[in-house]
Length: 220
Image (cartoon, rainbow, N blue to C red; front, side, top):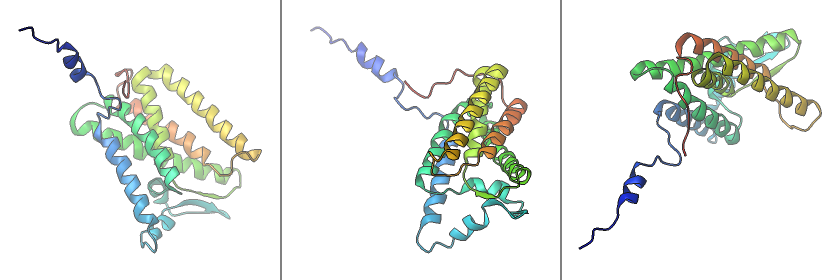
C-alpha cells in the first residue's frame, strides 16, 4: 500500500488565518465601544443622558465639564463613526500591544496610550476652539485611535517612522479641513483632537513602548 502525500495538509494547518487578531485587548475595547453605542442608541435610553453630558464642547467662551476631555472618547455620532474608529483601534492597537511588553503590563500600557491620547486630544481641541474664538462639540474615540497610530509607528520603525507617520497624519488632517472648507465634506471633524491625540500617543509611546520592536502584519 502506498501512503498518500499529506504534506499539503500539514502546511495548511500551520498557515496563519487570513485575519489574525492575536491581541485581545484592542478587540475587547472595540467591543465595549460598540456596546456603549448600541445602548446609547436605544429608543428612550437613559444612557443617552450620559452621552449628552459626556460631550466635549466650547460655546461662547464656556468649556464643558473637565471630565469631558476623557468621556467624549466613548461616545459616537452613528454606527459608521464607531465602526471606523474601532477598525483603526484594532489595527493600530494590535501593533502597539506587540511593542508593550508582556502580561498585564502590555494591556495596561495599551490602555494608557489610548486614554492618554484621548485626554491630550481633547485638551488640544479645547485650546484650538479658544484660540480661534470658535465653538463646537466633539465625541468619538478618534483621538485615542490617532495616539495608537503613533504607537504603531514607534514600535515598528522608531523615531524616523514616528515623524513620517506624523507628517502623513498632518497631511490627511489638512485634506479634511480643505474638504470641509470647500463644501465637499458634509460633516465637521475635530482635527485638533486628531493631531493632539497623535502627539499624545507619540509622547506616551516613547515613554512606555519599545521602539522598532515588531514587524507588524495583521494577516496574510
